[in-house]
Amino acid sequence: MKKTFILSGIIALLLSAMWLAGCNNVMQTETAKNSDTAVVTNNAPTNDAPTTIDSHRTFRVDFKSEPSEIKAGTPTLLSFSVKDKAGTTVKDLQIVHEKPMHLLIVSRDLAEFYHIHPEQQADGTYRVSHTFPNGGEYKLYADFTPQAAVQVVEQIDIKVAGTERAKVSLQPDASFEKTVNGLRVVMKPSAGIKAEQELTLDFQAFDAKTNKPATDLQNYLGELAHFVIISEDMKDFVHAHPMAKGESMDSVKMDDKQTDNHADGGHDHSTMEGMTTKESASEVSAHTAFPRAGLYKLWAQFQRNNNVISVPFVVRVPKGEQSTTANNQSVPPDAIKVTVSGNGYEPSQIKVEKGKPVKLAFYRADANNCGGEVVFPKLNVTRKLPVGETILVEFTPTEAGELAFACGMNMMTGKILVQ
Ligand SMILES: [Cu+2]
Image (tube, rainbow, N blue to C red):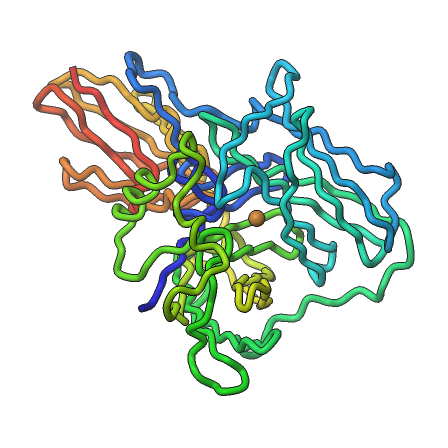
């Protein structure tokens, strides 16, 4: 059976369940934007105010290290304290992919990559020990999801004292075939790689010795594989989420809702962790988009014989056709502006009146979300939302009720309340 990974980001209700979920989880440094389906809605929406919680304005991370000077070769305690707006320590994080916090540590040249998990302490902080092998610049990506909020990826730059190794220059792979620890992995993009273009990356895993498909892959953090993609400048951060091939986005969403009940202690794949009960799939896919032109490094992580194997690929992403200068066309005065971002649609609920023409102006500021398309099923309207352009959707509602709209993957949703 082939599996498909949906690269996702890092967030959301749906996602809350995951570490790597549904659509692209791309984070930008400056804004630490979350990705995925960061749609958090009120249960009883009564007005048209945006119902999305912007985690990034609501939460921050205090980072400390012990010793405070991080030295190469010396075990260092990395400590993360999540604070809410009031400065109170947030102790209650959702279990996403079996962990409350995922920490990715990457050297500035992207040559070193570590994926570890800070554990919660009595005082509510999350700590993990790590020994940096070399001096130099590193970036920490702390990935967590507070309760009733969307995923947050906090990027923290650190400097490690000690001898620096020679920088490894990032060179695009001539062929997407790599062997690491006896696992040979072939990556095949479904289409030509271009900035902002959604595509599927298919991965086939083989035993390097026998050259037979590797059917002994173990679940790692609840999934058959995990993907992390980081841009050369380290600003874009993408997580991937696995999904069985043939499964629609809808069914994945449904599945996540059913199984990722954090109140009950997390999702039920955990019992599969590290166990091989039958032959695993040897092929997995990631659905993603590279937000910008440039070089990206991707790590596909598999688990075999209880060892995690990280297989790196370096991809050159050329400019996409639509990634030219942003056409920030102004919003007509009679239009309702709907912003599309990693946090979903803002506003996600819009009140209109029956019989009166409605003009919605969709604006997608960046590619860090899966909102490349907006669909109004009842109106039979689908519109592409190129980054940086204002796209108008006009109609006149003829009956009262709800008109739903969603992204092409049905991961981001909104509704129009016709009165
Ligand atoms: Cu993790």
